[in-house]
Image 1: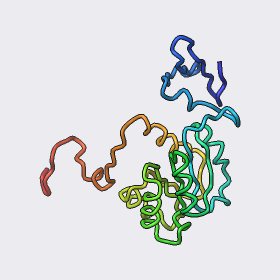
Image 2 (image 1 turned 180 degrees about the horizontal axis):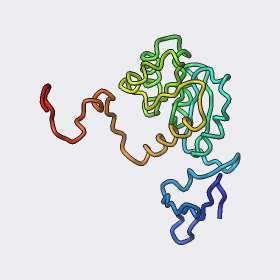
Image 3 (image 1 turned 180 degrees about the vertical axis):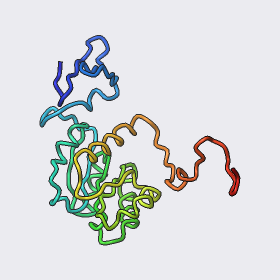
Length: 191
């Protein structure tokens, strides 16, 4: 049995699958290596890159990344991001758009060009909150309000982790708003 946070997991010898003894959840072979914890037990399956000034954040982002089996590293500039992208798998980039000195839309485009396979999460200030839908429509995997909240960071990284097993389908937020609830096409003025 292995204790991982509040739950206990066991490796089933015949199938090498992980089973949540407390909740009965079954994670299967694909995710077994992602459920590691603590320093030397972390098996790097990718990198979460912090691009921008995260010095005021009160979270241990490294520990959160390790919960998913990822290393977390800050980068100071675009050339450092490109270098880590060439030498490692960049799973996610937490991006503070002001780091590049350009508007968030340009920052998103520049980072996407540097690490095209990475999931980009824009970490914005309150004054940019009105652009959240536009940020998603422009290709951000997610958006987080800064200062960051532990549960929101974990949830976002969890979505990234899960997206590795399911194909990613980008649906613009505007398309979601216009979709009829009951599947019937509605015409303006129709009852």
